[in-house]
Image (cartoon, rainbow, N blue to C red):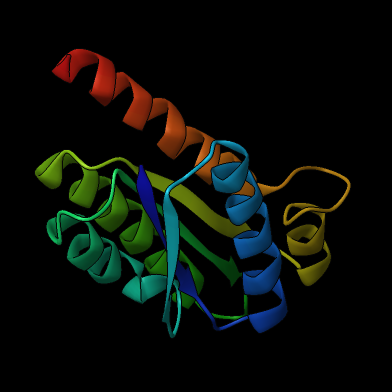
Length: 141
């Protein structure tokens, strides 16, 4: 199976950590290919996921990025639209899309959740994509 990773690069270091986690999971599952597509930030992830899903080339798409709360309501809008948009892509296309977008209060929390002491959201998103891709393959016979 081939997989796509779409990643918001607004926080470059976090993006690299998330991509590393997702890539590791896909490689461990013997993915035929893993293609990484960069976008500016989390808000752009749904459209990139849609383009990847509609290409017909991928069994699933891991959507990665980070949104860190600031002083305005921008955080809420970006998080909600990224989550809604990514889910919409999966439901519209039937291509599994994993949500690996960190939605955190601080940079420290982001580090802990991008391969740090708490978890690896990039790896978790790839695991979700794999689980759904395998389910789809079983149901398709």
